[in-house]
Length: 410
Image 1: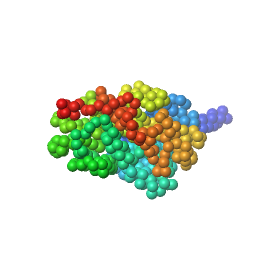
Image 2: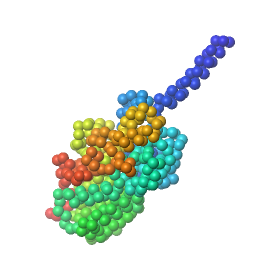
Image 3: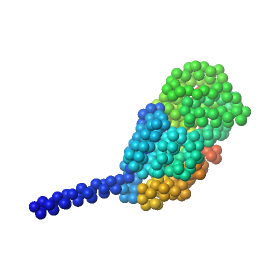
Image 4: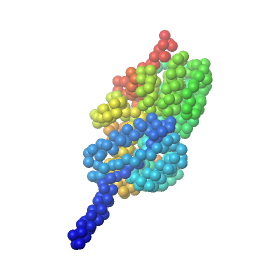
């Protein structure tokens, strides 16, 4: 009987000690990204960067000797209630110790994740998100934006358009943007910049997601014959169908796609047909040649892993994971969220191209170490032709006058 009793005690002790040790050996990381809906391609870009960082950390022994475990949540179209559900599920129920969201909304994410203490990294690029943060910076001190706001990105687009080594045939611009906060922020800013600098904007259209038939708008565009057309819709099929219908009867127009160019599906689907299109990526890793040996090594690792060059958000999301991990190592305990948030804000993070430093709004403003990259599709791939700020050509990559302009001008 004593032997049976001792065996029972041993088994019970094993149950008591084993489960907590298993839990303590894992750090949960929340990943709310669009997995369905119009922003799926962008969500996939972020996921690749996040997964790459977490796999590298786990492969090198983990964080504080613990493995990172990702818990995903589909944010769909970033409806406020869906964003709140994600925060309550990941932070409230799953008790994650950091959240890496990529593009997450336009301020509703700040409110949703600001209820909790875990560091939250987003790539909103939204002035509306910053405005929410400013309502209570102390409450939202766990919110870190990985990119500059749409207003500044649009101004960067304008600076590069004016810096292109190309003589515009006129000073007319057409702007088309999606009917969301991002699209209108970029579209309205560009319109103001063009007009302030002596250009006319005879057409500025806001269109819904799902627009596939562009005939009526293209008829107006062909009548206007703008020197520049900027399209800001972060969904692949809209921008693919627009260009394929435009190219049937093109005008001598520089086509600027802004952030719309970078969902991977755009270039993968059109290939060399997209040659000549230009666009931008905030907090960009310039490609195909990176600015530093460390950055080039990262580009090479990414390209080998995913069989294509980095796209929008991948490097920013990767860097967010590593900025958090560096802070956790410094603090020595992933559960001490307030100290980790303070460390990130105060110390920043040394990345592949230089320092990431968050400003008083906890926003990563564009600069020399973390620039806005401006790309042109050349030979079916994105090639960095400018970085900004400051506005300057990137390495030896030259802007190429699009074939439809050369043909129209011949």
